[in-house]
Image 1 (cartoon, rainbow, N blue to C red):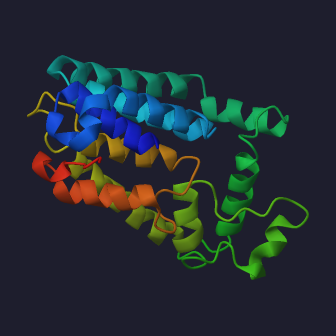
Image 2 (cartoon, rainbow, N blue to C red):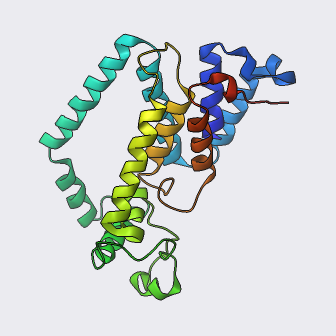
Length: 236
C-alpha cells in the first residue's frame, strides 16, 4: 500500500496524467486518500515511516537542482552529528537497560550476529535461518522467521562473502535508480522505490532474503528506468 501510495502521489505531483487511466482518472485524489488510509490502518509503523522518508529523499534529490545538493549536505551533516554524539553507544546502553527493544528486534539482531560470527566467512547458507536445527538459539523466546534486517540476514546466510555481494547489488541498484538525478526536474519512481526498499531493509528483510513483492517491483522499475513510458500503471 505504501508503494502504491508513493507512486500515485509522485504521478500526481509530476502531473503525469497518463499514469491514471480509465475511470480512476476522475477520482485520483480519492484514490490517494483511500490507499493512504489502508496503509495507515495496517499499523506497519516503521514501514510507513521509511516510506515517508524515502518519498522525501526522492523528492528532494530529483525535483529541483538546489534541493539535490542541500539534501546531500544535510545527510552528511546529520551523519557527522550522530558520529560526534556516539549514537551507537547510546543505543547499546538503552538496549542493555531495557529502555529500547524495537519490538524485540534488537534481541534478534544481537543473537543473529553472535551466531553468524561463528561462521563469518561463508555463513550458514541461504534459507537456513528458520531451520529447526537452529531453534536452540531462540529457546524460550520468540522464534523469528528471519533476522529482521537485510544486512544481518545476508551476513548470517552468506558471511562476509554474502554481505559483500549484497552491498555490490545495492550499489548497482543505487546507480541505476539515481541515474538521471541531474538531468530531470521530476521525481523519479525508481529512486523512491529504491530508497523505500533500502530503508525498510533496516528493520526487515527486503534485501538479501526470500524475494518479496516490493523487491520484485524494485527490479521491474529499475529494468524500465529511465523510460517513463514503460512505467504506466493501469487502474481500472
